[in-house]
Length: 71
View (cartoon, rainbow, N blue to C red):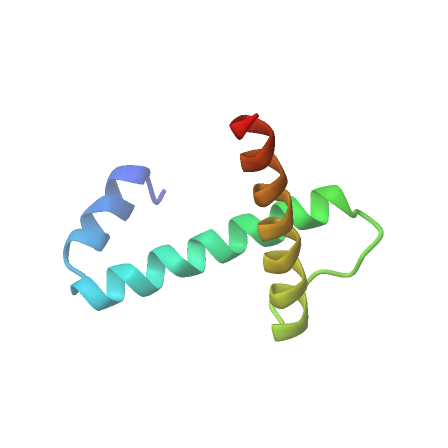
């Protein structure tokens, strides 16, 4: 079984650029998952359209949260 320790070990062998790309991909997946949870009836995939929609939604929600914290 592939464990968190295995994953961290694999990441340690990556170049800085590879780690950056891997972490960016993981963040995109996280945002897509949150977007799908928020809109279960929407079709969400690893497409440019879905990624753009979900990132825009995420940015708008984060802006609202930051504005609320600033008050």
